[in-house]
Image 1: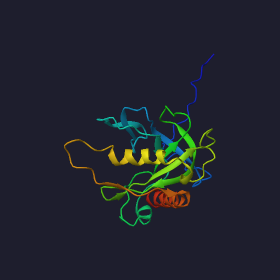
Image 2: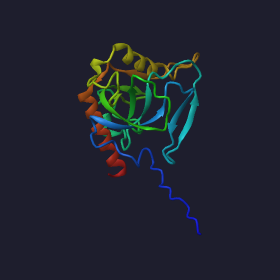
Image 3: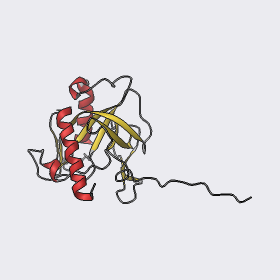
Image 4: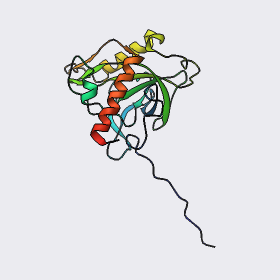
Length: 204
């Protein structure tokens, strides 16, 4: 009897091979790169699609939520056009912080989340928005539809993390600014713009 080797489908690239989701920009797919328990900063390698170590955390700043990006998004001219402070995007996929009632302790997973708002962040003169979403059907936050319905403490933790996670004692403070949170409607506009930027850069 001749044995046959099992067929293995090729793993899709997390950025280019997946989609933002059929119900985007309200409900989106999020590829998780980091969790609050991670001791180093991971990020996607854009060429291979593998998760790589970007740098070790030097200090005790802790990511307050699971963190990743929306597939097939890109932040360039159209995302930057929504900003009053810059005309440059950061040339990366659109970042998402996912709030959930139970801890998400694994990265390299795909989940669906409802978009409820975001933070407009400027990092080194580039638009680097952080979309805020809640895990779909979450037992605690699943009914939230706008960032105004989340406790202010959660938003402040997210804001504080991104304002401080690059700070190193003895060095100049990183040039980072973050506006007050915006709601779901503007977050939807940012997502649409990032999808259009992706299509313009890479094709649909």
